[in-house]
Length: 271
View 1 (cartoon, rainbow, N blue to C red):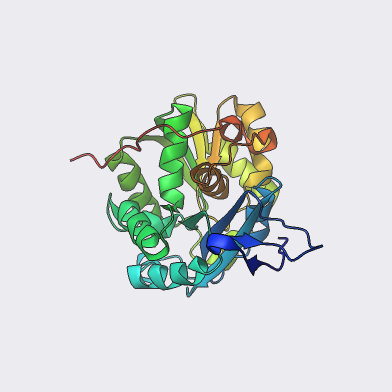
View 2: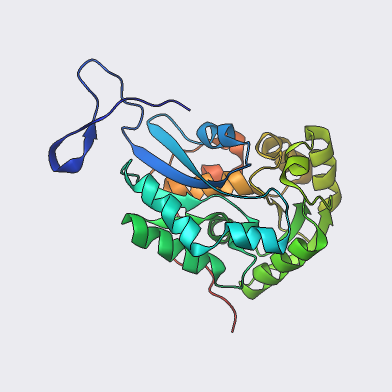
């Protein structure tokens, strides 16, 4: 991730000191990320020139259980982190965590996005908000899911997606209960999981978790399976870029990254 010293210009806008290069001349994206997350480099790879990425953390035990995820994803924790990011004058702030934005009811991500936006004065988003937006933009509703999570987390993911109008046509899981174990999964194992998770009934493949090996598999999986692939980090950054008014096409990160804009409206919870 590249950063540059900034000074305040007219109207509170930031500009580079004379003779210095600006790396954020198009947008600055703020991310809230679990403390033990280790794929920060994914986020900076997923943006084009002129966009900077700024990451802050929320405390997390690293145990991928409903109780521990809930303690991490308390609204007060997200708001405190968002307020720190406000100081970099971001164009958008996203809560970059999959399970922490779907575990607590079908409107969990909506409440979190609104709280982040209220704390920063800029558009707020979450990973699951971004995934819903990605599926809407791709025009897909039936998903195969390649998950690293344990059963209780997978069950909540299935319920959340169903409540928001999506169908889980198939799911395969590694049943891992720690963030370190998830991060340590190698590329071959992640690829095999994805291949096993896909069935012909699926219109797209979804790979959740922002600390899971995924973005370097998108291109080959789309070629091998013949359907769009949506991953946690890819969707998070695509949505943040589009909310920031940046519509660049980066085809190596999948079909989603060739779509320059958002569709109006994300499916609301089914009542």
